[in-house]
Image (cartoon, rainbow, N blue to C red):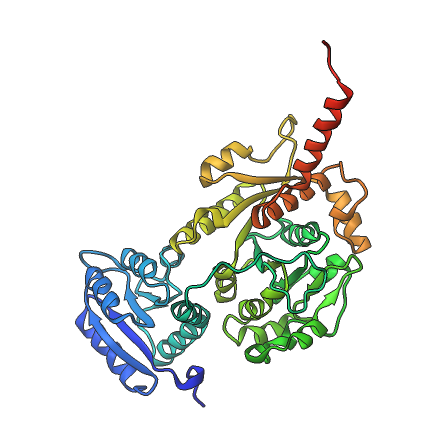
Length: 441
């Protein structure tokens, strides 16, 4: 049974290796599947690879790391920057984690250790080609799109049927466990809910998602029900799958059991494709994710309006966040696309504080911390036990509620424009103060 891509696409491949025998061997292997793969070039240096890639614009580049004049890391970075629809598969005799990390940071989509078996080569090319399908489709749509006026802004109507919404996608991610990522995602979604604004919270942690636990939601319908219907997703069917929290927040739950994640992952970029299909019906879509860096995650970060990168002020968490920021830089994401948030922040005036100061973290990651959420385990646990976002607490002036509200308000203003609730309140207070005439004359 063939695992070739749907639609019978012929995958164009550029081979890059400084050893002629290796290039020839790979070429021969691909020739055995000539109806599926087409070799469009074969070169021996990094500089030649860039030139050949620009001329042939292949779907896949098989790239060796160690080469004369320019290594594969640098060549991959240049190619993925210039050709976002070209995916690079890195290969090397060196298979340690440092090499793999450098390969991924340069923009490579997969890493193969030499020697390569035929099945490993074929399956990796197929997998990477499928996983980048959304990027190619988006590029084709943009190329075919006629010049037109800027679409109208989102309507303030409560009824989302037939109304063009803003469709802002916010991906909440952390490479480390225990950072409070799900808490932040659920509270951000809740905080973005305002009159006339439609918000959807998506649990894309496919194996161990906890959104349902945090909000006390149980449903037989989950994201898994949508995977087989991606190509012709009916809005009414989508609405029937989505759960509604007591607060009115719409929630798309993840698979009920870890083993069901494979069924979702078997369809490349399935979650991002679903979100793209329904984005026009919502003003904000907040996506909670797993800690894994894989094609599902990268397809989500590719389409995101903003990525909220969550860390705690600890050495391991900050180190992992720095790796992720480096990866996003290599993927040519604009710096302003990623917002860095610190959670579980201790009072920096406390003498017994054991976590890293914010200024030290900002200097290390070379990014500003956009929000600091203080420790509030008792309040958060109480909210989880009740099945409500902590942001819905009546204690709106206490930490961490006020900081979560301020962050959600900041995100709303950043993406939708206008005056934030906090700014409006401060302005109102100033007016009242002015009328009363506080202060000495």
